[in-house]
Image 1 (spheres, rainbow, N blue to C red):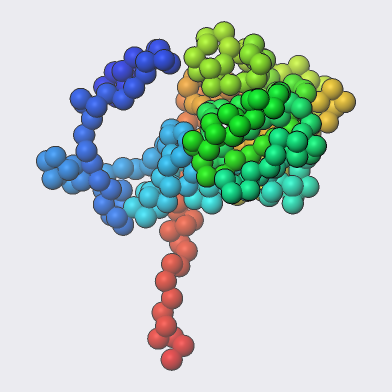
Image 2 (cartoon, one colour):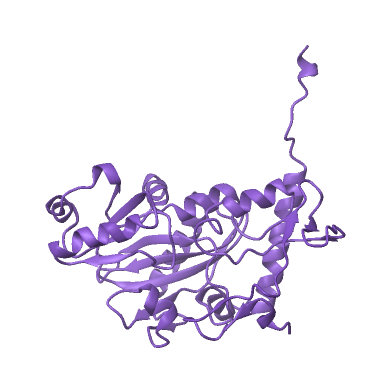
Length: 318
């Protein structure tokens, strides 16, 4: 096994983890060169990349930016392409598409800085409590739960630190269910799992800082009809949002049995203890086999895209 300290320092401590810049090398992708990379320190360009497995979260990593760079460099990569990644990151656009596809979601409002509503208007539309979050962000960064008017302005300011557009969502009482999806044109869904948070909500601290912040129950204890419903909605969500390769769809299961889609994660956590691979392990696909399948899906898509025409010969119409 490779020495992870070459790339990450304090990898076992979520509070102190950071990149090891001392051993890093500056490289550049050579456009349209079948994955060749150039070392900016030595000026050598004799190495190439077969396929990229992005494990970057948040803006520039899973919002389509990195995916666009890899497409320009003509390199196969795992996961959603530019469109699916962008839509999966923008919670506002995501929820609009899900709503148009008649996929059940919670009530929400979207605003930019010039048209922020009053606290009273939000309560009238969504009730109390409600959540304020950046439209484009992940890992619960910038998310606040608002239960009183005195917390509203602070929550809005916090969300606007990370995006020019914010989302305000109703509070949904229910269990937090997650389902992994795998595939390109014919995706399949795993058994569902459940996140049992020990915090007020599944915050950044609960996810990454507090080792007792949440428990994962795999598979979730659900009736067969709910399992089937979750899996069907997971695949439908994946297809609706133009996703490929992998994705984890997060749900709320209400006490009355209603299943609501919360969001999709196009690059879900992929450590061996993360929900995405653990759900597939419970579904009969091991961690190493899962990685192999995702790489194959990336290569299959790349081969199909290479057959597409990207230019048009104008002389043909003269």
